[in-house]
Amino acid sequence: MNEPLAASRFQRITHWLMAACLGVMAVAVFVNVVLRYGFGSGIAASEELSRLLFVWMVFIGATAAYPAGEHMAFTSLVGMLKDRPVPMAVMTVLIRLLVLLGCVLVAWGAWQQVIVGMDSTSVVLGYPTALLPLPAFLASAAIGVMALVELVRREPLDLGHEAEVE
Image (cartoon, rainbow, N blue to C red; front, side, top):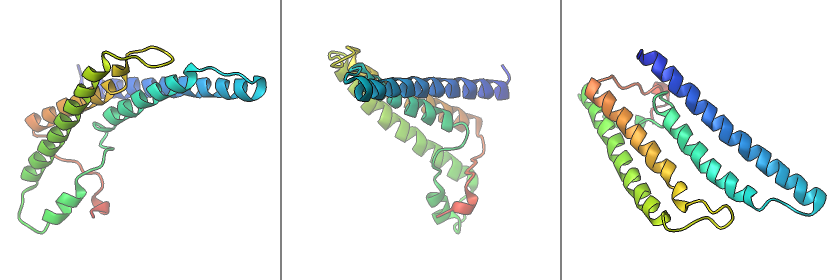
């Protein structure tokens, strides 16, 4: 598969998923507000559904932001070392290794929470509470795989924020 085509497809799918999450959340909250203020009743599942969808939307967005270069960059680290003779190739490897370490730590913590949540269910909807930390695990695994592929391919680091070096 052509790499730009795959990236474009990935971006379209993630944007569609985020839009679907946001749309369902907006409708659920709107209907709940109208029912509460207009008719004195509401949908108990609205808040729980919105919370679950918001968590998924955030981590889908985080995963989509990585290949687009829209995450925070290690510009402070690059800024500190720019006066020293550290080749950018070495800096790139160091930064990608730090990203991988962060992904491993987040995935490990999220997986522990997934395991804890397997035995309990949400109060109103009754879904396994493992669905709340699951997107953190999936996002960190996906970002870790993307960073590892970039590391193996020796892709140059694109900070994209060169004017904002701290």
